[in-house]
Amino acid sequence: MSFATPGSRRYPVKPTDVYLFATCLVDQFEPQAGLDTVRLLEREGIRVHYLEQQTCCGQPAHSSGFPDEARAVALQQLKLFTQPWPVVVPSGSCGGMMHQHYPKLFADDPVLHAQAVDLAERVFELTEFLVHVVNFSQPDLGPASTIALHTSCHARREMGSHETSVALLASMAQIKVVEQARIEECCGFGGTFAMRYPDISQAIVTDKVAALRATGAERVVSADCGCLLNITGRAAKQDELAGQSVPSLPGEHIASFLWRRTTGDAV
Image (cartoon, rainbow, N blue to C red; front, side, top):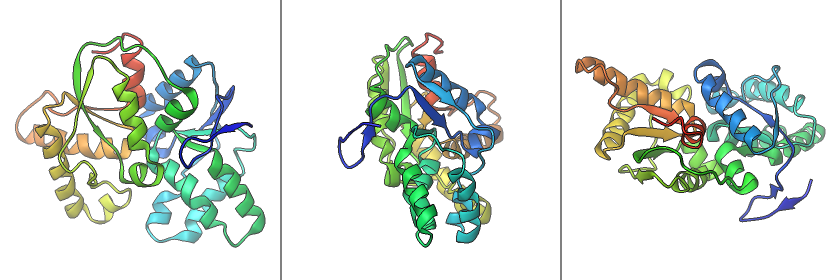
């Protein structure tokens, strides 16, 4: 596989085949984001291979302090992606786990470490892949719209994909992106954090929803379903308590947003 090298990452030339690592949240809660990821890639002439044996990336166990359990889950993924194709992940959070932490999990096993390094180098977050590998350029066919972008903590700090998300949205001629206050702050999801510390999580996401609403955006777009579920779930609860039936802060995964905007299906 030949590579180009903008910045610190090595990027392949546009391949004919990729693997899709769909993530648990996409699979269980937001399958449309996975389907739209496939559509975006196939429209670019790329064959997408989805292996049904894939499971979790292992991040919930890893971030909760259970490295042995995380290693067992990660090992299942090491066995799957055997062809030398890029692995595209519609989540900077899961992408960060696979790209940054898999080699560390297997540092004590030379054979598995080599496999982990090989896989990690082939893992790309979706927006990163669209910008740096696909050179995504599609006309914006939707009406004028104002949106706010939220980027997960791991996507921002481990994958740098806030920059590629911004680049993709900026390429949409009819889209105005407004910036929320304290844009780098967490939404309060944090995987198992939201379940282990629900009161703290609720306080954090309440602040996040207020900041997003204050922008006047029509909707929030993110490349991570966990953040979207947390943000839109809190906004929906507030709407319910206020007796409001129309969502005040709808949200959408960036894959679905880009697909709609570039197919004329945008509303």
